[in-house]
Image (cartoon, rainbow, N blue to C red):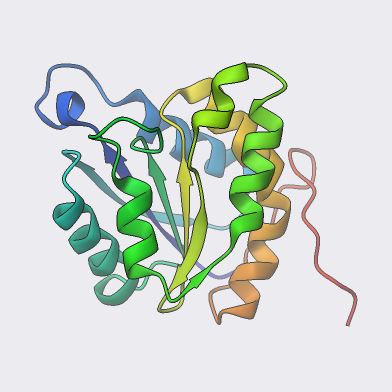
Length: 176
């Protein structure tokens, strides 16, 4: 079974300064550990909400670390400091708007402010980048909604083969 390399980036001025613990990045890793049977190698970064720095880290993980999947948390809202989506749009050569549409649709079932989220996903080199919100509960809801398409997307862009724990999440791959 392939080892899956996953980049996790938390964008938070306060968490990166040590003012509070990053529970969102941990929530991503906990969720992916449940979803996948593969061994996962995580490359974790907790950084301030600075667009050039976010772009640099996304490119580092996509190019130098060759991550199959890069998941960000934080910086998806409308405030001036929310620039994670802007960084993702800048580094990706293909945007996959269906990810954001699905995540907002699911989140709207819980909170009316989900329409303020700018979550998206895209391809950078051979990495799938997914922008998630900053709250652990929302992270799980959004990943539950979009992850069924992630392994096939990773297949299509030349990444390692993900084996899902079908007792936890059902993924879809077209029959060949």
